[in-house]
Length: 291
Ligand code: NDP
Image 1 (tube, rainbow, N blue to C red):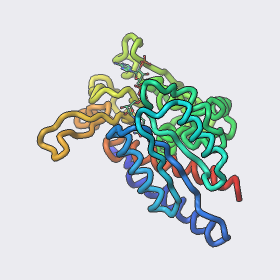
Image 2: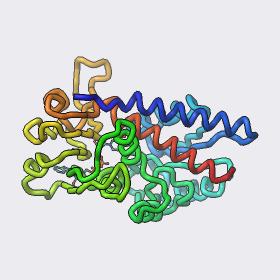
Image 3: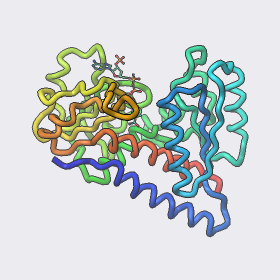
Image 4: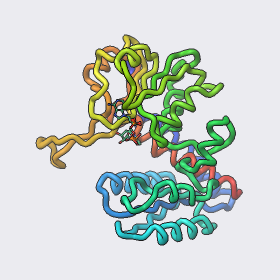
């Protein structure tokens, strides 16, 4: 079994981006600037935002976090998005999800100008990606594709089973794996909560991508010998032995599935760091448009 080391590959990607920042500075341009809107104080969201800010500063990007209380009105949030859309000092920005229930995610996502939508959630970016046109690819599927590429995982003609069909992960992941390019050219099956015979479908997978948000859901009896297993899940499970009172686990039972898989991502240290690195890559693409 080979570990697909997202920590190591994300470091390579970030080093490359850092070199691009240095080149921009040497040519008299300002560095890329990523802004993040954070509504409320969801602990996991705060952790993700802190990690994004830290990653920006490590490679020489500017970053700004705009905090709002959970009771902010949708109108005020949309106004903040309009401000960022118009602010020429900001190359790209994201609205950290989830948002409070009184705010409509769809309306918020559609308000972000597509050329600054470095999360790749805007329907224009999703549509362009589906058509194989230049677009911001959402960071988690983009990061996974980058990981497959850098480990030279064969994808052509393989059966790829994607567990989960969310707009953020499973949906775009499936689109990317069926594209007529590398990584891609896979035969893709998308499974979800209404799928019947899930185990039999998973057992057919040469590449199994789990993005369902259920701790250790994928067990070894669901995985074919030699499969490539990508674990997107980030689940907090109670663990009184840890200082924080919890530990992070993926959607895959790593200790047993890793005995059967040819390649597998760990949690943490797999898809998570790749997601952040890919967000930085998208921000560089956005920044280069002003050069
Ligand atoms: P969502 O809750 O939006 O989607 C979950 C998907 O899994 C849905 O399509 C759902 O089906 C499907 N599903 C749920 N239960 C089952 C089941 N028993 N059998 C089959 N399918 C099932 O989650 P996300 O896509 O946003 O995230 C998935 C996981 O990935 C989470 O753990 C999340 O924390 C993690 N994540 C990790 C990131 C990273 O950077 N590593 C980034 C983003 C997410 P249905 O559509 O029918 O409801």
